[in-house]
Image (cartoon, rainbow, N blue to C red; front, top):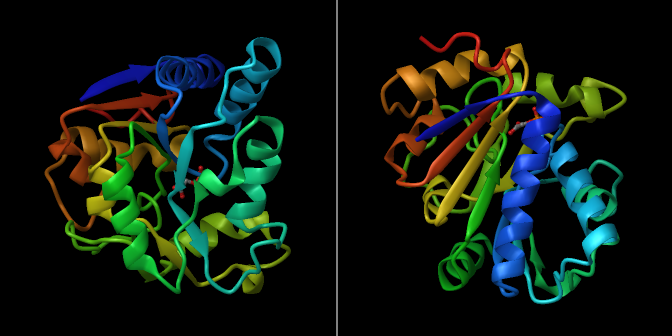
Amino acid sequence: MKIVIDEISTINKMVAKEITKLVKNNPNAVLGLATGGTPLGIYENLVLDYKENKTNYENVTTFNLDEYVGLDINHEQSYHTYMRKNLFNHININLENTHFPTLENPQSYTKLIKEKSIDIQILGVGSNGHIGFNEPGTSFDSETGYVTLAESTIEDNKRFFDSIEDVPTSAVTMGLKDIMSAKRIMLIAFGKNKAQAIKQLINGKEDEAWPLTILKRHPYVTVYLDKEAASLIE
Ligand code: PGA
């Protein structure tokens, strides 16, 4: 596992550059995408690059990590809306090639990921160590499916909603096994509230109580941290 500690703006540029490099070399690239606060700067850089260099996303396929259950896909806080607003509306991606897990057919998501094979998976991490919405205690063998959100996740995500009662309490998420099937994983964490989870990943053992520690098994992971997220590493 490679660890990069740098300024947030530098990391955003570095990660975006890896993505555009992949897409330029492989026009049929398959990307695993994350939502939340962390990847916003990466998507900004991808949009900037598209404006300047016209990187071609026409044949790129994407798989998002998760989506809330109980929000219409057009709700302003749905992850469908997030992706359109922050990335898809600003590049020449074919929306038919962009995928989200659904409650109706989670097994088909796992199947499609296996068929297509993700080249780069972008990951944020929850303060409790979740990746996707795979909360603490999730089996390391999990595939895409319905999950209940942890109290701490609802608390962390209330900043996006008017009140905590409005935060969905369940979701559909790509499973840990699906995430691990990606050829390359880039995990990004910024801020002090991620420091404990990052310490578990770097200094701790594989432990289902800290879902991100499954990444210790993956042969090609880069962890991008700002100073605060890296502050508890021994
Ligand atoms: P954040 O969420 O990027 O909004 O901090 C990350 C996550 O919950 O995976």
